Length: 429
Image (cartoon, rainbow, N blue to C red; front, side, top):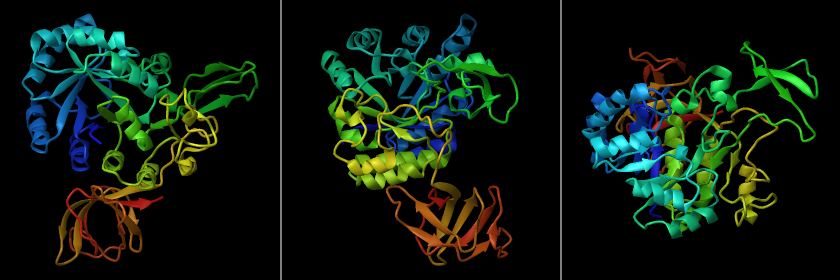
C-alpha cells in the first residue's frame, strides 16, 4: 500500500523512535500554538537540525500550529511563522483562519494541512479550504469511509486527505472539547487539555438518580450527575484502531494515515508505528493486532468508519471474525461502560545502546526493573518474534547484580540474540 504513515513525536527521543520504526512522516509542535503544550515539544532553534535529520532518512516533518489564537498573541505568532519558514519543515498543521492568513503572507511557500479541529465533514468545506491555500485536509473523526469516498470524488485531485487510524478519541466534536475548561480551567483548544474524559471517577453517597462525582482519589470539587430513563453516560471513550482496514481506507481515497499520541511514551510510539508499518507491508493482521494489544490502551473501536455498514454491528467483524477476540463483540461501539482504565500486555524494560557480537552482550539503558531469569522480548523494526532469558547483569562498575535498578542506569546484560542501537527490550505484564 502507498499510504503515508504519520507518527507523533512529543520530544526528540520519540521523534527518533518514530523514524527508526518506519514512519514516513512525523508531526511535532513548539511550546506555543500547539494543542499538546504539555508535551516536551521542540524549540524553534533546534528545528533546522532536527528536520534535516529526518530528511536524511527520507522522512517528512509537519509542525502543529493548530491552537486557537487570541489577538494578544498575533505578534508572537508572526515571529513563530517566520522561524518555521526557515526551519525546513514540510508543512504546517493549522486550524485558526488567522494562522492560514498570516502563513500565506509570511511563509507563502509552506504547505498547509488543515487540522481535524476544523471539523471538515463535506466536500464543499474541503474545497473552500483548498481555495485558501490548504493542500491537505485532516478529516473529522465523525466521517464514515463511505462519506470519505464521496468527498474524495468531489474535491480537486490535488487536495490530499488524511485520517486518524489509531489512538485516543476525545468525547467532543472533532476534539472541540470544553470539559477541560469547565472542570480544571485548562483550555483544551489552546493545548492544555487535562483529559478529564479519561479520569476514573467516584460517586458520593451512592444515590441512584442524583449524585455528585469527582476524579477518584484526588479530592477537590464535586460535580453533579443525574440519571434519566436511559441511564448516565460518563465519558468513557474507547481507543480507535483501524489497522485491519488500511486497504479499505486507501480505496476510499485517503493518502495519509495518522497515529495519535504526542504525549505517549517511546514504547507506545515504537510499538504502534512498527505495527502499522508491518500492516502496510503485508504482515498477517493477527501479528499486527497482537502487537497493538501490547500497548497501553482502552478497549479498541473502529470509531465511525463503518457506522452505516455491517462491520459496525455486533457478532462478526467483517471477514475477520477472529478479531472479535481482540475488539469484543461490537467493534463499532464508541464507549466503554464496564471498565474505566487502560490495559496493556507489555512494559518497556530497556533501550539498547550498543551490542557486542563477539561477547554476545548488550549495553542498555534500563527503564523499568527486571532481574535474572526474566524473559525479555525484543522490539525491533518489523521484528517482534524474538526473546531471550536474562542470564547475567553487570552494572557500570563491572559488578554482577541480580536485578536491574531503576531508573535509567546503564547496564550490560548477556543476550544471545543480535541487537541494534535503538531496539527496545520489553517484558510481559
